[in-house]
Image (cartoon, rainbow, N blue to C red; front, side, top):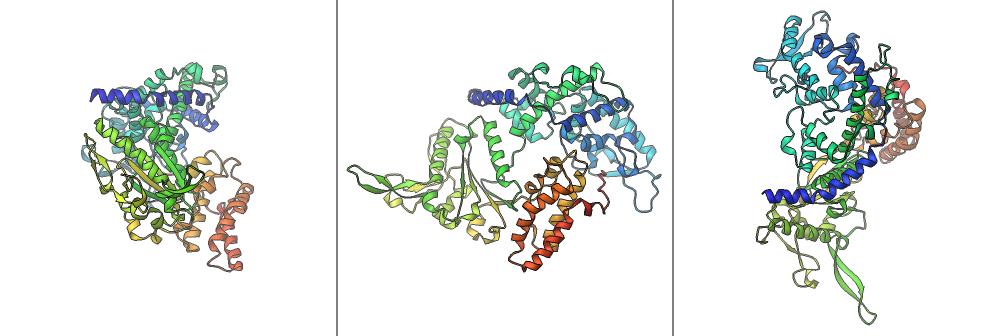
Length: 575
């Protein structure tokens, strides 16, 4: 086992060297100014509200009461560009203020705290005296330990991801702004230090190792100079002191390392089965997310993308001969031409994956190299004809595999042109180490239109419009909240008022194009005219007359404007 582990680490050397070179190209980029704004907001808080004297009403509150931001709101909502996390619920804060019921006076403050034994399953509703006592005895001591970077194995009653964000904001020189266990584990596996990544300090080992491997230093990676930072002024009118300058420069370097790693390890999809199709409306990022996820997985495994992945875009004329095998003309001696059985793109790729699987199994590898085949716009081809008799081979229970001696198990079928193939080449199977991933726009051809034999062999994962992605794209814009609400309202209009259903909603990629120009009546009108109206008109063409289409588009245009949103109350981001 030790030898196998060492071989795996040696095999990663090239990928780690590539990662190091990529980092040195990445580190020169300046942070988004919105990140700096959020960090200054945190420094304001750190100055005005020392954590060791933090009061309950400054820890949890309700924005609607007009009291400004409070600690949990600051950590979760106001500093998202410094590292985003979302707790399972407000219970992750240990204690939170409960919204008053209708007619209840605001003075009757009520709070939710854990039930007996500090559990989260059952919560208790308490008044201010009990809440204060619980906060001072159970919550604030944990916050102080996190801010001081003290050893604290038991983080209860706080949720781990919330605790990690708190610790990071106070100690950016020690940690990275990574909070999800699966992302941290993925990086740890790549570096061979997964066993060291525990507790709220889980990213410390990652940062220390990469700082050493990449020769990271503040002087080398920080674009905020000391002189520049001396000119920063916080809310109280005072400049940064020396300790705040040091912390800010550590923060910048940590943010860059975090952003770099998250791009390569943090956006991965969890492929539920070996055969999966991601479907949904246009513009929901299906192909982009799949390719990005595969690239991250391959990098984490220490391999090259082109060696482990094949991407094919299906189209109406795509055939079995292109995909599995077919007769192709070749030149022969004497100037003649002969028809020869030639493998298609999927068969060639399966052979590569099968050869690797046999090698890995005979070396005793429990986790063989993984290969990925992506069929983009899979629904544009006639799949039953493209796959032919090979469809049965995709089933996980019938995949090809090998034992330590190289003996093969699994199913091989005789292909359409198998009778013309050479010795041992007329039968075909799909190896166990191959993922078959498809993407499709549901409006082109719905999932229901596929025959049952095909549908039952795939997992079908719907992707919809991601409003959080839109929110991140326009974060910092004064109309950000209104814009996200408008996008959501437009999709509800399409889905329910026009009765087109969720498959015809507009994906977030369309709405995000406004980010570079800012949210305004002008930019939204231009977006509607050039991207949304043509799409919506095409949707309606089969169901409505030209006059009805014009009327419906006019309704949609009215929804997609800041002036219509101004007539409604701005959304309140309470816990």
